[in-house]
Length: 172
Image (cartoon, rainbow, N blue to C red):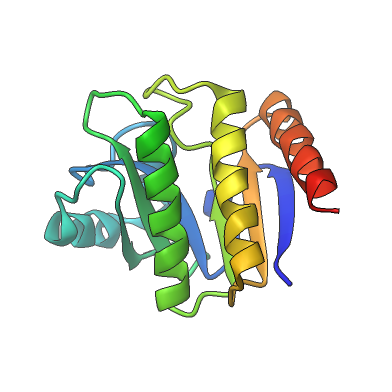
């Protein structure tokens, strides 16, 4: 059974199989989480992103994690550069992340609140979509042991925790 954890913190400091980057489809590491990943991980991450990209909106790509404590970074393309995240792009890119995790035999994964920064997607809707996808993935059977939602601040953590608690209650 996959354990789902909701935490406040910085995913770039997590020692996990993979952390997820809220990415644009060109896979250009800019500001926000992507910038923190680029600064902490070093140039090897952007070098691999450049080789992979661009990818379709709603897809994901996996790269090395460079100097980060994680083994990999999965880049979740929920928008184009300068664009907005949509419900459909968030759903499909979250599924793509989970599929890549399976294909690469990952056991631990950290997800951010994708699309809620510069892409302007609503936090509660993001939590609902991403956590529903994780719960559905878990119900279908998965090799993932632990999936973390790592949120930047306490307010976001509370929103994700509330949505997770409601989804868990519905499963019972």
